Length: 95
Image (cartoon, rainbow, N blue to C red; front, side, top):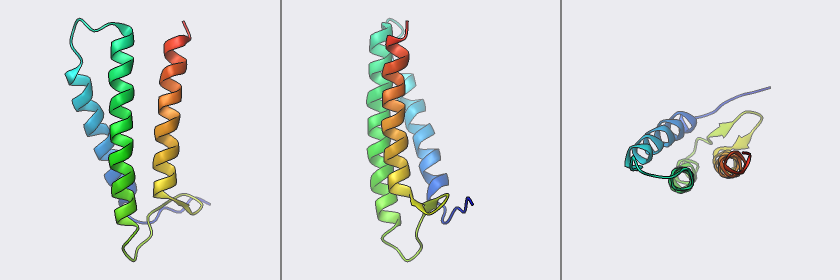
């Protein structure tokens, strides 16, 4: 059963989208495919680190922020961040 506790998921989602939007605007027009993927992976790493630190801070309070079946927000943020990096590399080399 999926039960979400806390508002941390919403906060992390908005921060991730905002950071990736800013990173995508910093990519120059003349960037190669490799440069674009590199910018996005670095942006994803930065967003993951920021979200992890925020999730860690949120869980220091009395309310535990979880994602579904009791998985802590920190583990979910790290798992998704690593997954997106791996997916970006796979998509880059898929051609």
